[in-house]
Image 1: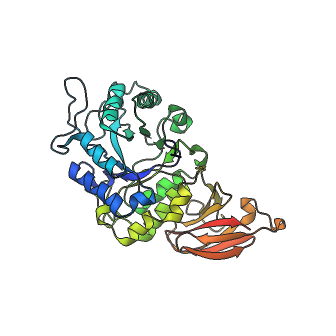
Image 2: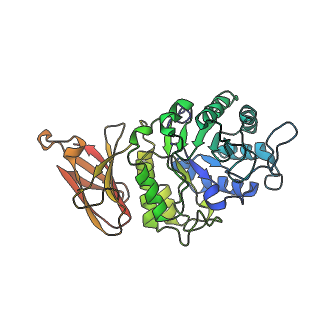
Length: 384
């Protein structure tokens, strides 16, 4: 049975983090080829999404959006067909304002026309940004407007709302019909950005679920500073260890997994992080529950730097992530009592290490791990 649209956190690739304005038809085709050839599609990544800067600066005489013929000489329908033939899905970008963030035509007051255009091209995913919104207009209404347009365009199009967490979005976005929604500022390819975004969402576990997923922004895993934007990139980017923690946080917290690096030129370590089947399995769990936080001995550790995330899974297992965002090695402990397993129950947990891919054995009452700086340990626990 085919999954319903937006049931699980979407997985795919987006052009913005690495390429920003420097996109073209050949690049997108090459990425689609790589998605299939290098195992990303098999791992679950299905959307190939073109971000901003794909159109001309003006609409045509009938008010329609026009792909830039220099960047996309074959047109969007042919590109979508190519992507679909690979078994992938095709995503595009627009904006709730009069213009996109890079100054191209937005969909303000063209929502139904643009939705029909996207449908005619074979679009499967729309990222909908929030720049240049007229000040007198209600942002909540604009997202509801585009959602309604997409749901009546004649094609299933996943709606990715991207208002950066503004306008108390948590209170209305699910009702709007969005399948995922950006709740944070733009990510940057450095450890402080990853850490800041993750910590900002630690108390938002109740605002993600099936059909409406809290999007903590695209992944920077594997970028290593490789962006043509000085805002996004930084010299060297992050370490592979920090990217591993980044991927674990996003997966545990239920964020969509949208790759932002140039997958055509990645190391085996990057592939192993992005395609880790056990971590992806946690992210894609059918119930899409948020992860709750346990503080790691608050009398010893900063609660925003050392903490445990616990995610209840559909089959009765528990995903447990021990995160050390601090600058020094720490020993972190999980007390099973805090997860609802009292010692009097005569129950323990059989643990599987999701990064080392090995069984750790059966533990009672507690589990401890020595976690290096900026690193994590993620286990899948089975009640025994």
